[in-house]
Length: 239
Image 1 (cartoon, one colour):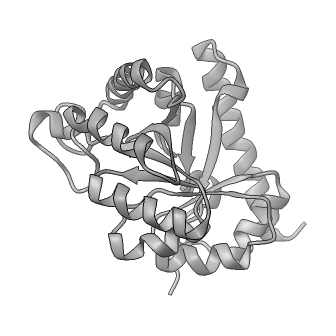
Image 2 (image 1 turned 120 degrees about the vertical axis):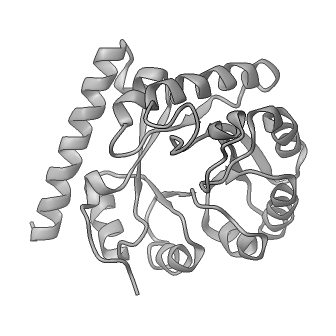
Image 3 (image 1 turned 90 degrees about the horizontal axis):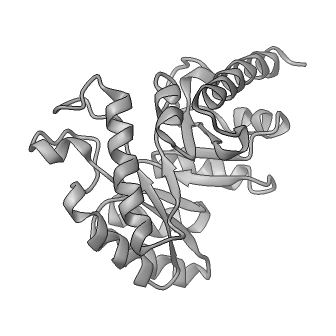
């Protein structure tokens, strides 16, 4: 194996061990948790190696990096997740390659995604991104809808042609009462997920947890964890 492939294989194995151990500790089956490798700032060559190593879900947060990378890897069987804050002028591009948009946070974005999905003849999975810090009025800069807006936004997604409501996503807040309390933050997200599934039973995806706090997310009940640095290491930004 090349040095890079060996490095990624070792990192993946360590992350897999962490996920498996967290599932055991939580009394969950390993199959209940999907690993999404966040490949932002890393080259397409790394995505190809990850695919060789069995990774099937990758995530990006900037369209200008993601679009050419997805095109270069179009021959691979991958599920592409868009996880960054999305401006409406980038929606048409994102809708051409993303399978899931995890950062839906406003109805204007729902309208734009729906139009783009219909135009592309594709169905986009959508997660409502929840800003947990907005509950206390200390909203940070990571995007998301306030908790009291979840149901309205979810209903808009479910009613929109070309879109499929998948569930909820959050990033552990840096401000407010959940700052530094990842497990409490993810437990709160699970409460919102339970409520959401009352009206939308199929919206059972919960995306939470990253390299530093994936164990807390799995303990709370997350179905998907988004891991970048722990798999790919710290590398210079592209460009």
